[in-house]
Length: 152
Image 1 (cartoon, one colour):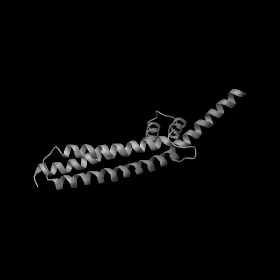
Image 2 (tube, rainbow, N blue to C red; image 1 turned 60 degrees about the horizontal axis):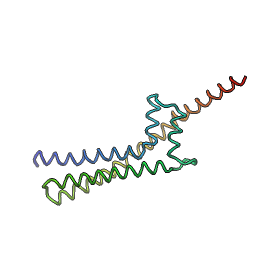
Image 3 (cartoon, rainbow, N blue to C red; image 1 turned 180 degrees about the horizontal axis):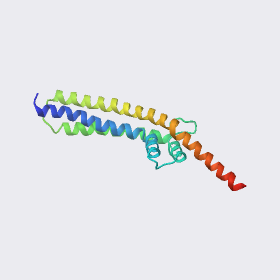
Image 4 (cartoon, one colour; image 1 turned 90 degrees about the horizontal axis):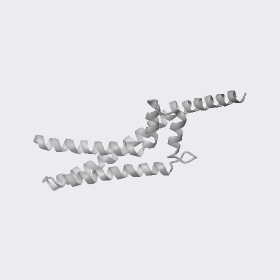
C-alpha cells in the first residue's frame, strides 16, 4: 500500500467525520446553543429555556422547530455522501473500491452523526436540569422579590 492509497483512506474518515459532526450538531442545535451561551454567560436561564421552548411543544415533546433541525441534519448527511460520491467519481480508482468507500462514508456519517446527536442531547438535558433550570428559578424568584418590593 503506497502513501497515496493511505491518504485516500484517511480522507474517507476525515470526510465522514466532518459531515457527521456537522449533521449531529445541526440536529440538536436547539438545545446545545442555549446551553453553551448560558455556560459562557451570554444568556440568562430564563432566556435559555424560552429559546429551547421554541423548539418543543408545551408538553415537552419534540416540536416543529426540532423536526426542522433534524431534517436539516439529514440533509447535511445526504449532501456529504453526495459530495463524496461526486468527488470520488473524478478519481480513477477501482470501481469496487469506490463502492466500498461510498458504503463506508455513508455508514460512518450515519452512525457518527446519530451518536453525536444522541450524546449532545443527553448532555444538554443534563446541563439544563443541573444548571439552567435552577438559574431560571432563581431569576424568577428575584423578579418576584423586586415586584413585592415595588408594591410596598
